[in-house]
Length: 181
Image (cartoon, rainbow, N blue to C red; front, side, top):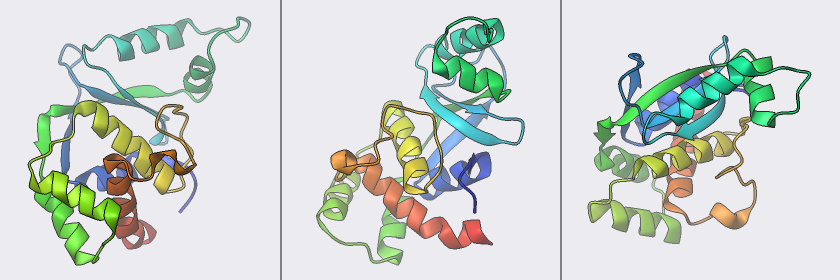
């Protein structure tokens, strides 16, 4: 399967979690999430952007990047890998909790983390766009993929029990057969 996260893998994971994320192609349209992607469609970074300024600033900084100047590691990563931003909208899409509930039932998941997630889902919890960002990063981690994010990318126990990490574990586990075929 490889260690690099492909856009199609991430798309499969967000769909299996019940998220409907729409690709935003028009520059003036707002997108609350974005990816930095290589020409080979490998995702190297996942971000959230409430007002549409962050990805534009990052793109400007990438275009101003020079190897002979000291700058952030993020800029070196996106410039040296010839990345471009791919913008997504959660606000336009939405979330269908039943998709995830069905997956939990199909795979007979159980335990205290599952109980907590089911309780939240059955009580109408809808993840914020920041929680969707966290889910996407946690799915990359749970899937064993290399990702440049520093926030939410812990490889240790600190995320156990968080709703987004539990969702990611369920979705990635349910996707192995799809991804290996």
